[in-house]
Amino acid sequence: MISNYESCIKACQQCLIDCQNCLVQMVGTESINDCPKCCIECVDACLICIKSMVADSRFTKDYAKICAEICEWCAEQCQQHEHGHCKVCAASCLVCADECRKLAA
Image 1 (spheres, one colour):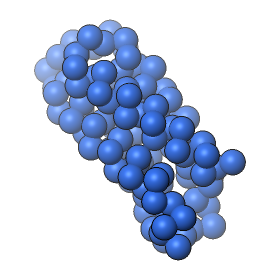
Image 2 (spheres, helix red, strand yellow):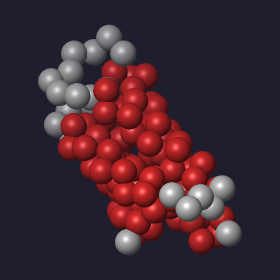
Image 3 (cartoon, one colour):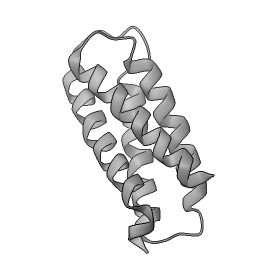
Image 4 (tube, helix red, strand yellow):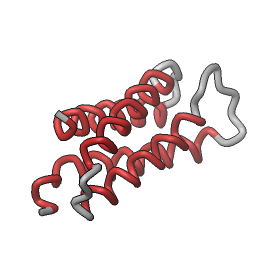
């Protein structure tokens, strides 16, 4: 059953990694918005979404929808920064949001 979710799992994994890196890189750095708070929420959302897909949970589509919303918010926040890690994070979040939206449809 996991093969049905393969592209979304990969997108969530990469997003989790990139958000965690952004979070670590932002420690001690001034932020003009909700970055790195959004990264914390995005890591958690991606993790629960991955867990639900692996378990083939009946709530996977619901988790994917919420994950997409959180990823889009995080991308919006991180795009406002000039840091390279924020740009990588934002791009990864957008890919993840797209995959999650496809799954939630």
